[in-house]
Length: 418
Image 1: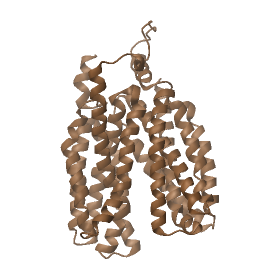
Image 2: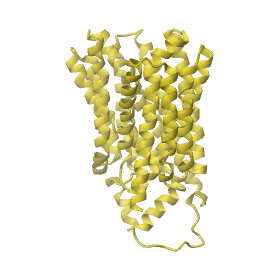
Image 3: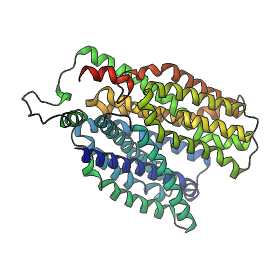
Image 4: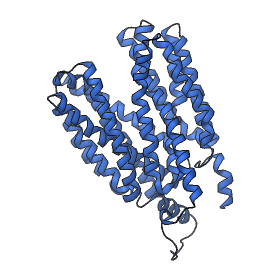
């Protein structure tokens, strides 16, 4: 059981790296595709909304299918779909074809994103300790791989269709290879099997039916959706802030602080590096202080980072602010995804899709909101709005005190079952 669990964790990491690489390759190819199709920046911006719409739809569909069929089936299928549709934007010859291509690729990407996160919840539950943040850190590793591949392909003069098609084909193969290592069955069955295997083999009684089939009381049904939507709202706030940092950090350094184009890129680089390092460390921190504390202090630290950037007199101070923001926010979203999955193991996919879906909308909305606010005030002062959202998230962090996995906050509950 221990070896199979380690294999499932490694397989999950493969899928996180895969989706980060595939999405990163598309992002690297955006300028080339824009030029090939012959569209303006504004038209491209409108078409990118379809990518987000496709991802949102894919998240909702895949989440429900994961609960019905199991992540062992849905994750590799979604990986194949994501890899197969990656080539479509490179083949587009006009805005209409690009619109359809982005909708299809977004659907595949969203499907893989939610299903692999749902499986990550199953693995985390079986481990009995926080490991979700590490999975999200490997997504960032995929982005680095994509940047290296994209730079190499561009220097070799390869077209977008060739680059994306080759990467997509390799992605399809990679999506199939670790499929057998994924955990079988529902999260409830998996977690129960892991716990009992560590004690003593227990024969299956006649009443040993999947927990998903056991009727729940009506009050539990009423409580779960409310908690999930609160988690989704917090994901919206946190991922909106991520979207702001992704799209506006370099522009703030260039337009507000007067940095050169190459130097301004360090603003995003500093944030991204801090985010990756923070996620690699967040699981250990979460195991010591609990997910609620990670969200509370992380969101507060992120808000402080935004304030520092907003009032920074020079680039060095702004870079420090982006580093603080990245470290602070790094562990927040993984804790929300984890809490959503653990709220009801039999509906982990559906719940994660709700939280991730609304969070994804926030990531898309953040840059647009900042753009609108720049008509009213300077760019750096608009960062005070996402800072306020993170303060609200810090105040609401107590929602994570229930359903923790492998943390101090779950110890009283665990003690009852010893």
